[in-house]
Image (cartoon, rainbow, N blue to C red):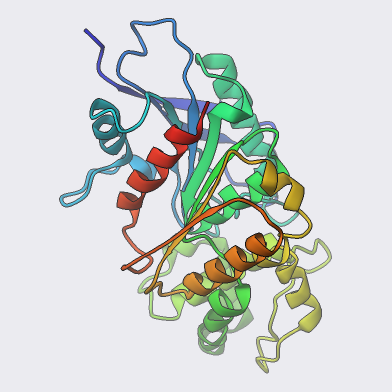
Length: 333
């Protein structure tokens, strides 16, 4: 009889995050899902890395919900119904005080791309994995989808399968609409209030409607336009007094936009065993348009991919993992 699945909470003492600029913890808790039968066998298993969205981390994927499955429950159902092969699921923590790292290395936040590779090395050393890119997938929703795509572009030697659910793309439509909210926040609180927000976002109460646009703009600035010479640690894409777009800073943001990276990483993207992109047609952050642009650019380069749109918005999309996990499982050797 196969043993039940297990979730183990690993603690990883990260060398990459030691002495990071924000003073965020370098010890990270990483949930690891082991499939039914793992403890009673000598088999090696494929791995899927699940990247969390902005303001979340791996532990959030374990949350109990009244109306939805959490990730281990979803994996149990899919494995037990033979819709996917047994696999190990890893849920890293690449969060920052500002809410997220976009899974990038940044002088303003820390070396989160490097940390993610640390996690892979740790898991391959500690568990019976198929330690090969053909058996190692990466996926995520929202900022997690962005991170999955960027890692697939930059490290196809590590991750051979990518599934991007509603990932950040075409920054023109997904981030610029937040700038007026950021400016209104600044208008209320000034630079001192902005610094208080950066120092302790969790302590801001009440959180008015301009809270998210403000913290999101700050967080993305820390990822896309870091600058050690700026007292904030990064450059803002807009002048907080006038609202004028700083085109030089904006160009630095766009250098991280997947829709402008397809040509640069065409060979890497073509090498993937699976490149899956999806987005809801009603996405509140306009990410469906970025997904369409991205798909067009992939097609122009002759890069194989699967694109899907569905009737939903941006939130509570864990159920969409049913689609990508089946494709991931079927696409492995």
